[in-house]
Figure: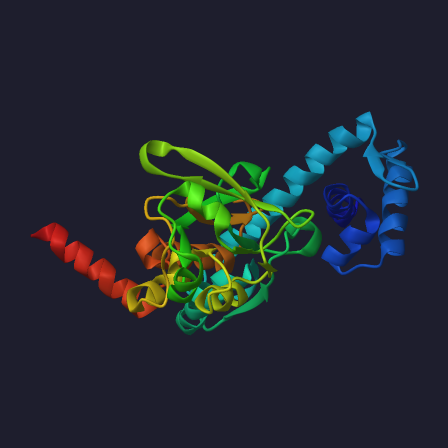
Length: 321
């Protein structure tokens, strides 16, 4: 009798791009996967994969068989999800990656409330700024902040909110170097930034009437961590672009001021990406819904859950009057 696991193994090997990656996802040794796929080819009497030292590629028969294997896998996942949805509470592990700043300012405050609401769910949060391969690394949800959604590829995207970068300067730097009166004055100011190529970087700014400016400069201080850059800005090391949810209190207190009012980078889109809607387990679906509730809209990005709920209640009351 045909072992349907072989169809699952074959689909995972193809989707992961190799036996080693599929083995990590499935928790099965690479050697066992290779043997099972070879036995599958022998039983079918046809070669499904072309193997080289660098990569795998599908034969014509392999492409046809892979489509059926993927359909079988998705139906099995859908069947499991249908059973799971009968349960009153989602359960299982949700694996999430999140940029450092977003985790510290927002997501880290939300996850405890989510777990309190769903006690049978575990969350494994990886706080890192690197770009992850969700399928390769077995990640359920990746949270991102980017100016566009165009680079999400085949992943499903759920937009959660927006954040605005602010070009800030400290009173100490103004006393030392002066406050810019126009974009041409930026050239004489010290700057700090997250990254550079050959010591130089570019800020893309948008000003009045949609005027665009590519500001090329050589930062005096580079750090791939926004919290470190914030300290540099506060101490007057240089002007800096910080997200509004990180520098709002400093602006209110006068510790920082807008360097050039009316000019700012394009808003960042806070969003979640995940591999597929089909077969999504209830715990992952509920986690995405929870983020959608509490991160929907720019003004909620930095709110803890209870404050977000108060704001939503105030909004509803205002709409009713």
